[in-house]
Amino acid sequence: MLEEQNNEPKRKYEWLSKWVKMTGERARIDAKVYNTYIVYEKEGKLVKEFPNGDIVPLRKGG
Image (cartoon, rainbow, N blue to C red; front, side, top):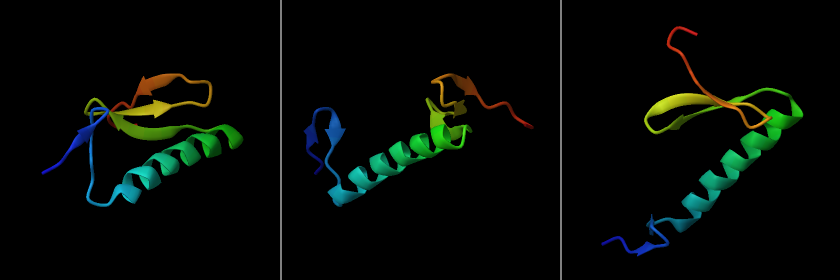
């Protein structure tokens, strides 16, 4: 059974949660350095996040 702490479920492999978070942070850093954006899923939809903090939905077909 999963125990919840701070509204986050405890994973079997807890290091995985830390690794995923660090990967996302690294992607944001790289996007700033190379002045590009990152794409990820938010609330079931794909979005682009730009280095200045703007988040826009990713449109179908480009």
